[in-house]
Amino acid sequence: MTAPLLSVRELTMSFPGRRGRSAPVRAVDGVSFEVAAGETLGLVGESGCGKSTTGRVIVRLLEPTAGTVAYDGRDISHLRQRELKPLRGALQMVFQDPHSSLNPRQTVARIIADPLLVRGSSAADARRRAAELMDLVGLIPEHLDRYPHEFSGGQAQRIGIARSLATGPRLIVADEPVSALDVSVQAQIVNLMERLQRELGLAYLFIAHDLSVVKRVCDRVAVMYLGRIVEIGDKRTVYDSPAHPYTRALLSAVPLPDPAAERARERITLHGDPPSPAAPPPGCTFHPRCPKAQEICRTEAPLLRIAPPGGTREVACHFPEAA
Picture (tube, rainbow, N blue to C red):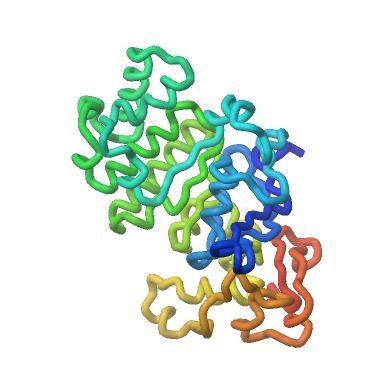
């Protein structure tokens, strides 16, 4: 069996409470998953569930509190910056807001070429490669000397993608890469990312809250709630027969293209807001909002386990739905 490109084990990320007086905030609480070479894993959930923090820890913009992140078989969880430098090119990130992730004082040529200059390329070679990348992502190379504000949101995201490709990465963490864009532009960026994956053999960790987009681009899906993964499996299994009540609620809110089917289906409404990660409830963290919660849910946290037995999907629920 081929070893995964990315392996995350019991990843935890905590932040200090306000002014040291309140409890620490556990944004990521024991998350485990793998991403194979050339695969796309979707990480989904409500805002504040820890998706983006997970992505930032994986590319080591944050150092984890506990757990391990292994890239290509090597534990990179606590490497020093000097040790991380050779790996920076292989692990890249695309951010949610394209304009805020681009330096407004730099030209596009400098933004894309910077990673190459840092790695020792000459200015001429870096500019030549920047022009190639502009063409690769569907932009006009002659616009290299323009500034980010001269581009639309979709074009700016293409520039961000080009920058992420400059060092020839194998894995890209895409943090809500289309959520700030118009729907028509979203489709263009998704098409671009799919084409780049085919041509370059990229693996993606695709972080999103739009389940329709995730269904299109991802091979497998991991559903996150309050810092924990509650369900993970191949796309078809999770979408066609969700086992966790939270997954079922999320999917019931996705609009269907058939008006008759939309009117006929059951809509699951979750009451209340997610609890604060600074004071999570005991037992299953979803139990205050779960329509199936029983006494064991209030006292004992469910483990992520294969359900049904012999399947490939894992669920953290005492009472998972039957397939």
